[in-house]
Image (tube, rainbow, N blue to C red; front, side, top):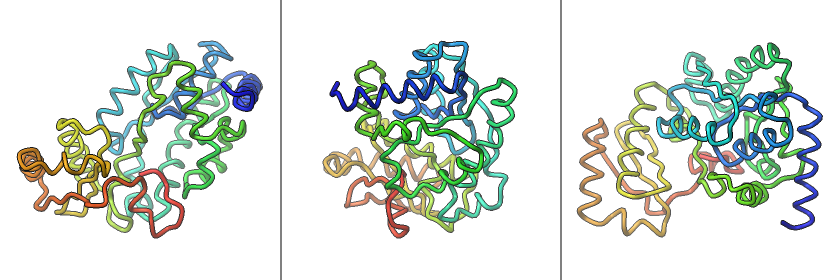
Length: 275
């Protein structure tokens, strides 16, 4: 570990000590996993609570993964049902949809944290400043702490520290909520989210680690990394994928020739957020 990174790690430890007791919004991604692991080391098990929002926008494989991760990290873990789909402002899917999702999450976390005399923290990191992150505004509204950002830890730093701590998420690809596959202005529905979840699970069964199925109503547009496009489009494999996606309700299936790009549906809004 470089001296500069060690200094930033030390700042993170100091910040967590100042919290004394912390509730962490735990998605199971690289950032929040590092934060939970650091808090566990600094504060002890009894002073850390990891909370995962569970709703239709959380992929089933991610729900299972986060339960396993909490056990690995040896922290108390709470799965908390959130109801962002009941919010018309979220369901209408505007460009700032994430604000309403995070506002729903933090509104549910706040009484839990108050009841345990804990501060709320999330995994926002220093690199996220460059992204389009409407949820950051919701976090400010609820007084949520961003220890990784405040310590100056970038995404690369998070991955380096995660590897140093031997966390299984050190090289985990981003896995944003399923709603990020639906173009802005198209309603987010329970049916669409379930179909997307099934579709991506089906493509992953073909051996692809990074997959997005963009949902355009009757059309499913499949994205995998550009280097894997030829493998995706091998005749027998592509025929299986098309048949499977049609069986779950899509009428048309296409492969994006540009390959996977995080935040593709966000391009017109400036800096791309994860998606």
